[in-house]
Image (cartoon, rainbow, N blue to C red; front, side, top):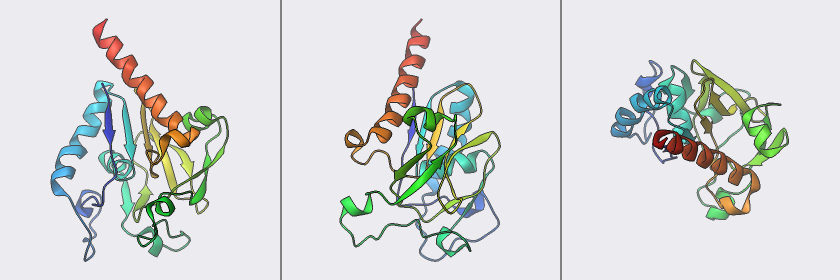
Length: 192
């Protein structure tokens, strides 16, 4: 009744979205790519609610024909969105930067505002947004931080990690509640 695409230490193999070769030391997971990339459009087609987090966010973009920057921090005009791995987890997953929410969008409606602060633990990011995807949030440097699918089923993808201390963050909790509501609605519809 729902599909949650988690974050991971691995990245999507670049051959799925460009002709660039992978950089040395890039952690890859070809089995996850082989499973999730075809699964995502199928879930959307079947009306299964999808919540995609970090790597999952990137997978949805690639599954719909989008492309990624392999190293956002090396792109002119973009800030470094990575965490300092030497910091304690509370600092790594703590507030990192604001994101501007699209007025009238799903996220702005959930939080009742057009700006929130999120954590940031990613090296890759959206270069070109996939077909049928609609921007929901952007970082101060213009990098896309959240999007949804322009269709009837619930599909929200966020670049940050809303699962971190979710019960202490009303915005993060609202994201999971909306996903849970969509899953329950699908379950009820299948039983009717």
